[in-house]
Length: 93
Image (tube, rainbow, N blue to C red; front, side):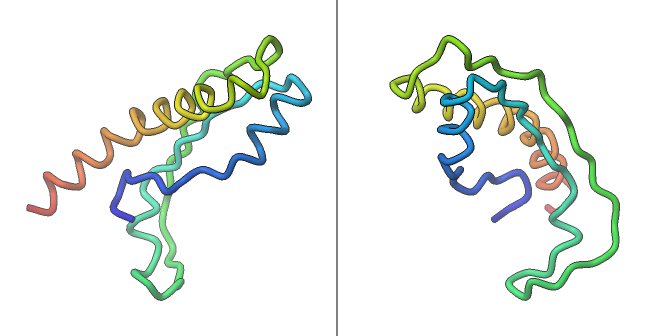
């Protein structure tokens, strides 16, 4: 994945949040691209930035709301990461 690119989300945590009415706290993790070896799985020392985004309440949602909830959480994280992705593209021209 490129910096700032999100891989597909697993739905299990979203189902659990809906079943227990627990809020979802989106987390964007930045700067990991420079710490992971490309296709090797090797990890290197470095500093990451974790951004905790505002919680999303689920207490009035049902399983029918799952697709919209997933899209909302993904959108919030993607928006936060897009700044890092644009920075990476500019620095690596």
